[in-house]
Image 1 (cartoon, rainbow, N blue to C red):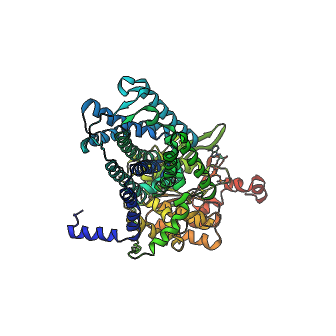
Image 2 (image 1 turned 45 degrees about the vertical axis):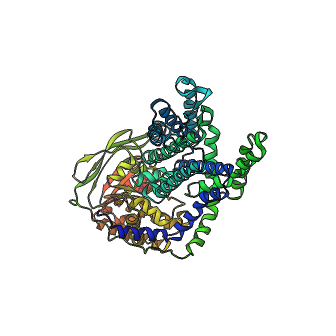
Image 3 (image 1 turned 120 degrees about the horizontal axis):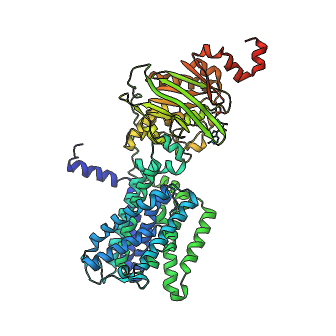
Length: 605
Ligand SMILES: Nc1ncnc2c1ncn2[C@@H]1O[C@H](COP(=O)(O)OP(=O)(O)OP(=O)(O)O)[C@@H](O)[C@H]1O
């Protein structure tokens, strides 16, 4: 890409600054700097430095706890690592903290991968407990290796004054640095929120299975989030060590502070950019002022203040401050002069799939799936050919969805193999569901799996991100698909508010947005009325006409018979018939499976 000329860049910057959301945010943020400068009291400067540090820590935590929905309660481990690394590098190597803090960040990132990789396989409270356990282990190590860390007695940062050593007599300098770090953290948090990674984190937080079907590696995106979060947390730890000039394991690896930063985000609005800052601004000054006025007699009072505010907010404003008031405030700000909404751009027609019609694109070889004593699929061997629509029918509980789960990587067969032929015709057996998706196997779920808090268009974008990294391109592709499936009129409605018919279409839309070469449809006509069923049949034909191969499970016999080129019938986990629709409906075993032996005998079939 060619670089924009300086005049062009200046114009773009001015346009950005002219956006009311940008200039009001910058004006509000600047108060954090302006108030203490105007008041000019060391105590007020201290309060604002504390606000910057905790707002930054909470914003960094929110990337993991809010965006990715992973309740880490041991996050101060990265703060402590940053603090100790920086202090020890000054003490032993005379390295300036400006460099030491980046070394600390690198160490924290490494530790975050070490902790995150095993912990992200745990769910809910187990994940939270594991993060606390890691925090405790590192705290005990810091106490144990006292020769190195100073142990419980603590470590004093060498007191060398000046910008090189980040130690000042005038406290206002600390505020400049803390404010700069806060701006950096907010900018990164905002960039993540409005990028592909942000959408992916939301998808993973809401529904891991649907995220995998959209080609997202759940562990991969969570690891990215924790690595960024750890680095930022560590930078604040390094800075705070220079500010406090004294480190001891109890405060550097503090569980109470880990809980506090999570609480600030919860109060301000979990998963929002401004929430952690708002939560901190609301709570920290009350606690700090009470401590300042009441002195030693108020020890522990801050915990009480945090608790009271948290209870009040969760009872009255479940979405936190930003979650509850954010949309209204944003609507007001948007009325200020300067806002320009970019026009919707729609991507051109669907991509045509290449390849020779009729060649195998997917094969299952003797698929067996056992659930305890139950054999759900019993030596199922199917070949799917390029460009066809293959219907899969069978009575309830026959094993159809289990076959789908195996050919999309959601279940590992007990025995047998699934082979996909890639773009070059090579046979491949991917290991995970997201790899199947990236190889071109797109699937819908029988029980719809929408990302409820995202709008229709954002749901489709989650699929589109697999082929488009930029938000604008993904949105254009999603708009094109929304029009194709008939969801354009509800594009800005949150998915949780859609009726079942639209949800079924959304399932197809999100999958279609991944541009699959093989499309697995699991009962997409269930719950649809006659007109919608007809529309779905036409849609599936249109999709096939772009070269996509379709395999569809369906109970609506009329629809699947008219749609399919070939039908496979499964009963009690076995393939009992295969052929063109007319042949299959006359098959004795098929009639027997659906209507029973007595019916077959009575009809003399
Ligand atoms: N994860 C699981 N654990 C245990 N049993 C399962 C699991 N998944 C499916 N089964 C069982 O395997 C059998 C086949 O189920 P499956 O959902 O594949 O049938 P189906 O043909 O898709 O049925 P339907 O048409 O009602 O959706 C059923 O008896 C079901 O209860």
